[in-house]
Length: 165
Image (cartoon, rainbow, N blue to C red; front, side):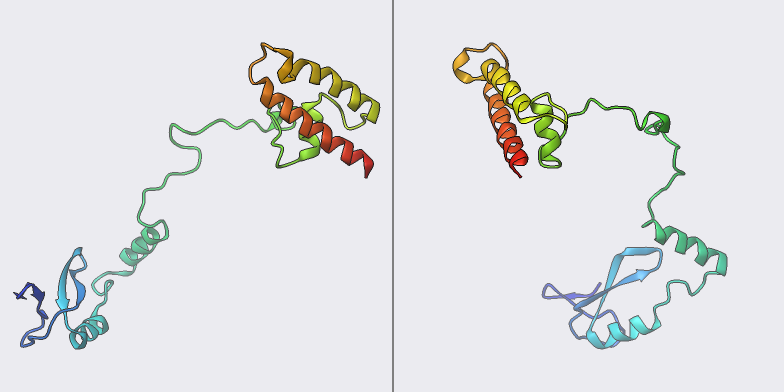
């Protein structure tokens, strides 16, 4: 590389302009560059052909590599992280908790241990039962009782508003 006063000089023969534009040296070393001025980088870009000396099979291999960003791939189901999926188990009841933001009605019913067919009297009864258990003034030994009480109040308020509609 030609350098003069910490600036790049155009690599084209008989050119002393400043080289502001980089270009690969060849197709095998794409991360090493040569520098050109604007006029000569345009010439370089017009003449650059990565696939110039390749046959059709080599070009096909390069295209396949480009479709996966040149990262290694394996067929689905191979490797140590593959899990044997069992789709027969898919429709069984799950014990996972419902997120209150995804379905507030279901979350509220779960918080108060109710079904969708619950009446207003059942909602009130369950609220009183759980409020006595989780209320902060009850000196409860239950872990996170304050948080559970807040969730209970939120669920009760939502269910009462839901039944009023």
